[in-house]
Image (cartoon, rainbow, N blue to C red; front, side):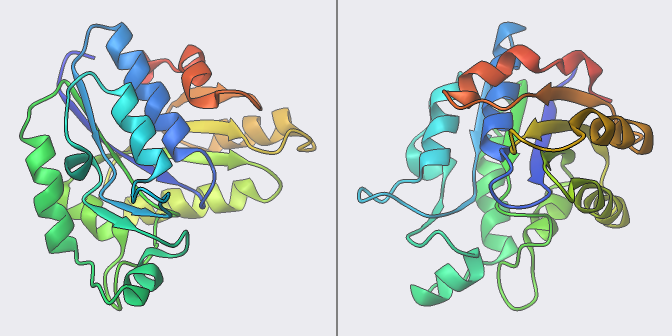
Length: 225
């Protein structure tokens, strides 16, 4: 990559490997000598110390040093939809707030900035805004993580259509095999490759040990549009 990239990591659903993909992309960029930074503006599901596992993984993977608060400004206790978790804590999340947090990280000028979403593309933040609105506000390029399991083709294509309708560019996608026993994996992968205009940056096989660290071996950032 010969220009600074600002990537929004979206997913076809929750628990499809967005953080793993983000960590892998950060690692691949570091191997190319790039400075990297990441932000997970909203995390739902925190440990006893009030921090989120995914945010900690991003911090460990990036080359620049930021405080936890900079990387994960909104940390919600319950591992549920962000707008519901926020309501349980009498908090309100807005795109305007999150935009400000993210702009602070983007202003650092890293060669690669990763902004990780939460849940799927249309996950609500409040009664009228979604996390997709944040990606639109920041005009980020999008990398879509497809959780490879039965039904993934429909989820992937609908998400890609929504990204396009929102006026954003899908610059690449990652296939992550989250079901080790998925029937017809190769056929499903071939179908997605045929139907996506964006390049597949990685096909990550099922991993049951340290997937974030090991997934970097499968990522090819030179394919980014």
